[in-house]
Length: 260
Image (cartoon, rainbow, N blue to C red; front, side, top):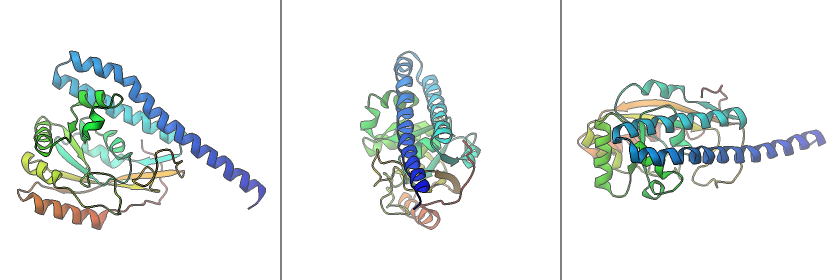
């Protein structure tokens, strides 16, 4: 390698490290800025109004965050296909789960979206207030989770779920849990599949939080088939998993313009 190329490589590595700090730091800052208002609004607003405001602020905040990644951190994001879902009423949005960024990517385009979150995150001082205000669903127990998800869908929310339960370890997808099928059955709401395709496994299960990304990072959200709810939720889960195994592509290598 020539001296000039070696210097360029060193500078790019430095840029990737700075981009990692900017990316993680800006998300943390946005969460901190929304924390006091979220705490206050949860106390003074009626539940439905607080949820509507909370969801829209989270969606707008995530969209701002992704703009920062696009402008400053060499992230090329094509999420435009998700826009067609925002006015379609109650839906269960089921996606593969290759990265910690997945919920951020989807919710940024759906202003009435909620997620199923770990109870520990709902109780987290940094993240919990915003999630509670927006009416996110705790996962502490199957029956309360299914019932609360059904009630939120009946009120018009769009529920973002990852049927694998956690980030993918064995690509293209891990085994699916039955939770999504049970929620679809109890709510009677259709399931819209979404495929998230990354150029690298950044922030995947085996990617440490403070390991620098390989930039530029490309990500695309691609809409898949829509499934109607079934009373046989076990069969539904099996069919959904088989479909994801056929269609999921863990790495997307095409370059694309940003659509954030």
